[in-house]
Length: 337
Image (tube, rainbow, N blue to C red; front, side):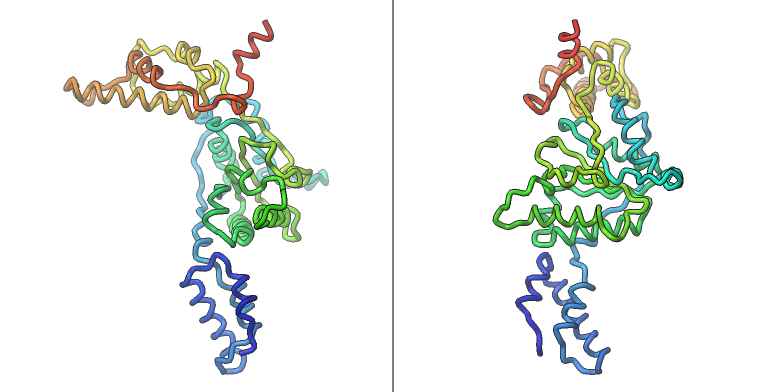
């Protein structure tokens, strides 16, 4: 057989044993179809490499998120910006075409952990009646070792096949960090593949990229140029009014006693992210359940009281601190006054 096994092996990083078996079978079928013999040529292997998809890449989840805007507390400015960057291109494409203007192809959500970036992206997809395809940056590198570039390519193929679609890259800094010439070059190749998809000959029709990070300074500037992920939307820690709104959202289905004062809780949770506030409500509910179990209270009478929130707060601290926190509304108020 006139084949180069070493060169072929270099092209199938990320293949498991079952994938290699399928590849060999595909190459044999190709050879038989050509001349009725099982003499495999390099061209047959090359064909099989392109035809066989690593099994790990077949599990990209495509979903339709049912997330309403009123489930996203605060972030009013971010909501307006993401509507322009995601909803408008998908809903009003003909208007952009009429004016000869290219719609944004991508948006970067930048803010501390727990500030609603994923929820905001899902809500934008829901508003746009678009499918939602989510990928975690570190998982993309670790799960598809040796095949990260192909994973990116297949991800966008899936998005095109399921358009309209929002492709969400969480922790995008993990796969698009500034290229520093590391030993493996994986990061540089992944960035290059992302750029190829964003700039490629095959347009991203009815596909919008939403990326999220809490380390915007780490992202390769090439990804943020016009025509790529060109719009940056800040998702800051919630101010008092937003914390009150978030607490109301998370207690919407939770019976509380009249003693629970959400405005007071909002005042006492400066520096808390939306994720922290959701955790606070869950912990208060757990304490209420614990008390009713110990006290023999009937399930129908279970409610969260102010004391449960007091106890939950006593054991909690904001998850975001230091340079990740940015400036809070309290700091702004102090400088303004």
